[in-house]
Figure (cartoon, helix red, strand yellow):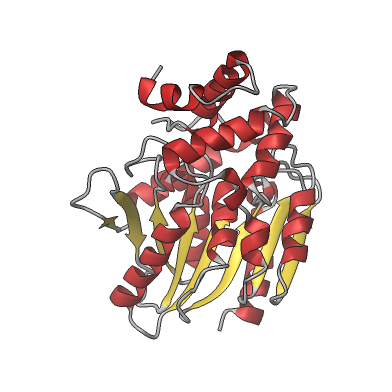
Length: 311
C-alpha cells in the first residue's frame, strides 16, 4: 500500500472507521488504477468477437500516423492514431474510447466513419493504452487533452476543417464534458453513445448494484482519495453540468437494456442540454452494444444526424 497516498488521508479521519477508509481505498484502486490489458467483454457481446477482431485487423493494416502530445514529458504523454480518409477530406472525427479500453477497441467505429469519408483521430486516454498515467480520470482531465487534439487536427487538416466528436461509454461522457468548454468553431457536432450523467452518480449506482454498498461513507471517501491523487473532487466530473453550457448539436445513443450505465442517465443528459439534440434508445441493446446489435441501423441513424447538423 502506497504510504504517500494513505498516511496523509488517515491522519485527519475521526468520523469514520479505518475500515471504511481502507475499503474505499481498495475500491479507488480497483476502479481508478490503470490496467495494461483490455478486460473481457460482457457475455452479451462475446458473440460479436469474430466481427470485432476483423475490425481490429482492418485498423492495424490501414495507413495511419502516430501523433503524440507532450512527447517530452513522460508523465503526461498522450498517444493517438491519425487515419486519413481514402481521398483528401476536410471532415475529421475524433473518437473517444471507453473505460479500460484503448484506441484499438474503437476499430469498428473508425471503419464506419472511414467509409463515410472521414479522417479519424483516435487517442489512447490517460491511464490507457500507450498513453501515460497511473490512474484513470473518467474523462475529466482527458477533455483538456481533446481540446488540444482538436487544435492539432485544425493545424494539420486546415482552418476549413469540419470536426465531429464521437465517444462511447466513458468516451461518450468525455465528449459530453468537452461540450461545456470553449470549443473551436471547426467542431460542428457531437455524438455520445451511453455516456454517464456524472461519475458520482455512476459510482453510487455501481456501489449498490455490484458491491451492495451504500453511497455513504464510501463515495465521499473515494472522492477525497481521488482529490489527493488526481487533484479534483468527483463532484466536478459531471456530463450534465457541462451539457448545460453546450451549444453544439448532439446525438445521444443508449441501449435500452443497459445495466452498467442505466438508460435513465441518457434522459438526464438529454434534458441537460438546450442545444439542438436527438435521442436514440436502442431498445434491446445492453451497454455499448448499440452498434453491434444492428450495425446498419446504427450507421443510418448517425448519417441521418450528420445530414441535418454536420455542415
